[in-house]
Image 1 (cartoon, helix red, strand yellow):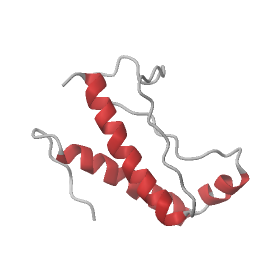
Image 2: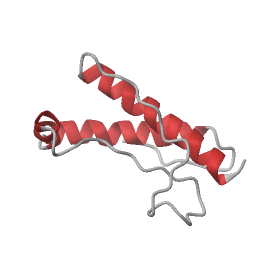
Image 3: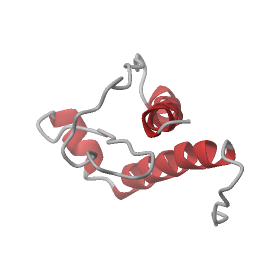
Image 4: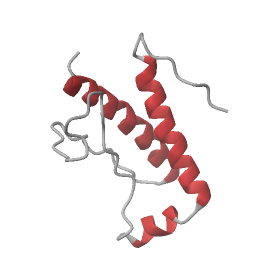
Length: 100
């Protein structure tokens, strides 16, 4: 699998985990499409599958208030871990540390 294909799969797993969190936390949450061809400078040249995750906007007053809450940030972190874990499970050569 090429890096771009791996990154797409990784992005899909991350998106699904974050959508599951959003759907549980907010009524009317919508799943948005993952970027098909990322061209972000921070991802160019990476030798491993890579994604850039946008988890909120501080310019949005509702999201700003949520991001100020430690329990919300913890749930976001757990969702990100779940997405990475699901991706790692699909790899035969990768072993993931156990969560607490």
